[in-house]
Image 1 (spheres, rainbow, N blue to C red):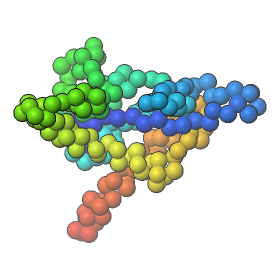
Image 2 (image 1 turned 90 degrees about the horizontal axis):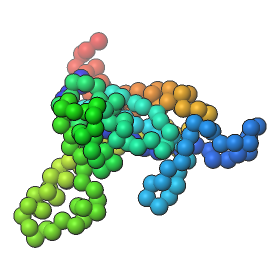
Image 3 (image 1 turned 90 degrees about the vertical axis):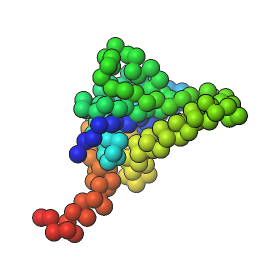
Length: 193
């Protein structure tokens, strides 16, 4: 079922920042991070998605302050030849643990893409290449949509990373069933047991 490419991405899942509890403190395993101009407190869900089917094959839960690129190699299943990521994964192919294993196709930083001169042929081709990469990477957003919007995981439900990571794995497994639903129903309609 797994093909030769993996798309990696991460999302922030908020945690209660309130200190109105028995210990009078926030969850020590959760951390804060800045995304754009806004601060977030919670954890990150890092996933690896098969580029052909869109099914999640790897889930890692970390504190929100963990950099995406540090988890890139752990999100691979080992048989892929291509890796895709957004601009947060710049330098994934240059890290010591990634030498020569996977060819990474990482998105150009938004500011650099905006600075392209569309009057030049080479810059138009670079922009078209970025559009193709974005179309491939779009599959990684579907599982996040399912767990955040359909399953309602806007905030973590437990204290600590271990319990929340276990819940993430369960939710992404259920998201895989929803993503593969049409294909699975199509097999049953053809007379498969």
